[in-house]
Length: 283
Image (tube, rainbow, N blue to C red; front, side, top):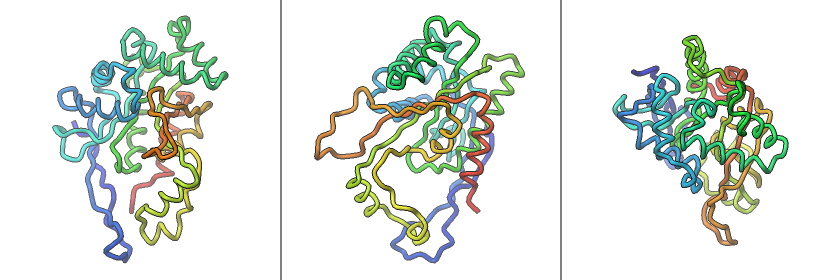
């Protein structure tokens, strides 16, 4: 069933030239995950999240597991319940589902990538290692991904609904009593030359030209909400994809990688509140 309808991207009110981009009105609807409709689109979003490293996971099994818990998590669609989702947000209990092939692969991947940070790795090893997996300190893996150009303004609603649904599940004695949460997201790295080229080629409105700072060399998240979420994380680690293509001097495209954010589960509702403040609905 539809959870809520939300307008996004109102038409621009600035008197801008015809050569500059304008915004269009689009209604986004929030739905529960639908195993009859969402499977293929969800597999594509999983592959988008992990990029070349998706080959390390049984993606079909991960999609099946996500869709097997339709009362926790949300999709965003534009053309009704029977259409493909453009965005997905849910949480999986790594302890409860530890015997699933996809969760075994995911735990192995998290532990491998976290080894670059000895403090984080030690913490995760104690929670996700052989003895930790039988403790009551459960970890929830938040799966969050969306198509390019989906507005960040949908994310406060999705995180708020996820916090609500976890609480409702707990009220029904369902296994969502998490002590910690792990979020895996994507980042890209820019050299100073690449940053200058992107800045020069990006279409910008007059308002953006006047107010936005120039993006310089550094590491950036694909999704702007990550900069808010990481403020609540006790550990954040950027890593290289295992199966990324080697980049030469004339490499084409962005230098991409992954990011692990590890945060206390009791801050999830604070995250939703902070996202709503950072990304308010367009007026």
